[in-house]
Amino acid sequence: MAPKSDTIAGVNRDRLQAFAEREQRRFAQSRPKTRKALEKGAETYLDGVPMHWMRDWPMPFPMLVAEARGARLTDLDGYGIDDFCLGDTGSMFGHSPAPVAKAIRKQARNGLTYMLPTEAALKAGRLLTNRFGDFRWQIATTATDANRFSLRVARAVTGRPKVLVFNGCYHGTVDDAMVELHDGKTRSRPGLVGQVTDLSTLAVSCEFNDLSGVEAALTRGDVAAILTEPVMTNSCMVLPAPGFHEGLRELATKHGALLIIDETHTISSGLGGYTAVHGLDPDIFVVGKCVAGGMPTAVWGLRPKVAEAFRAYDKKRAPGHSGMGTTLSANPMQFACLVANLSEVMTAKNYAHMEKGAARLHAGLSAVIEKHKAPWHVVRVGARVEFICAPGPLNNGSEAAGAHVHAVEAAVHTGLLNRGCLIAPFHNMMLVSPVTKKRQIDRLVGAFDEIMTELFA
Figure (cartoon, rainbow, N blue to C red):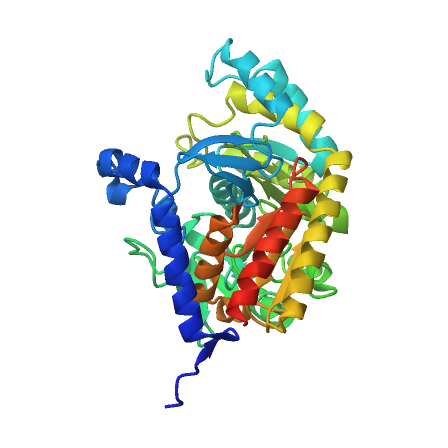
């Protein structure tokens, strides 16, 4: 066995451990109100948090948010924090955009949910088509639901059982997508809770950017749909190789599978998402997270030909439960927020601001990495920026998994938070919103430089 290296991602292990331990102590000691509140009130929740993902932040205990405005948080102990996580894209346009907050106040006076459409629903449908293209829309509460329902439709109209997904992908908590490539074979991801079904009976996994692997999988004739993000996210970010998306479209058409594009993270790419910016042609389009300005909402749309095929299927199926839909989906509050966000917040002007700021952040982080000769790199897609603690570029999910260096990422994350900057907990993702200021970007770059100076001394 080879001896253990004294460095990790180019950082001396002893120096990293000392830095990480100091930053953990610094956070804990500086937040007595938060610690006291958690000691008094967290025991009613499973593992002390209302949703288990909240345990995944690398800080020693959760930060309690007192207020969020624009692109800035204030925690219970009074610390102001520049927010580049933005709810992991849910608040990509900033916290409580004014038009959305106004729409919420107005709709709250007229009821929150009644399982019937409103006039605003009709307007929202037109706005969705204007923004994202010619689809027949449905409204869900989360992108997980939207992806799940899209797969049901794909299986219904093709009569095929499987979905093709890419190794390392993330499409919410859709069971079918929770597979990985292991020794060249598809298997269920080993960490799934309570998993009893062999998910390889429902899905096949290929590597991103591998068109020959995709064609081999499609040739078997049992794949109903390819479900993909335009860019692999929720891991170390992987960009598509030239011609990859055109190849996916051609292969899906050739082999009778539908192409589902999930833009839930890549909505950061520009106005209309990566699909509009780069001219993709999906059969089914999905977007969630920030589409209604932070109100829990997702949308999924079928191209007219797919919608017609589904109508024909729907007429012939036996009456009863479809397995699609949830009671609170398509509620009037969602439509009020969709109209406000699509018409007044998700604008070309705001995206231009986001792109400019993200380019500034990308350049600043890249300069710091170069300055310290770190074996790291930075990737940007529109308003989304990630630093990756490994050389790049990355080509697929296996490489992305290998580039994750949790010990380094956790230390840097906590160090940034102690210096007033919050980034996403699951990966090193940062978003620039329409209300993010230059000085906030420069503070983040400066904090990153301070940390790198110590780690690479």
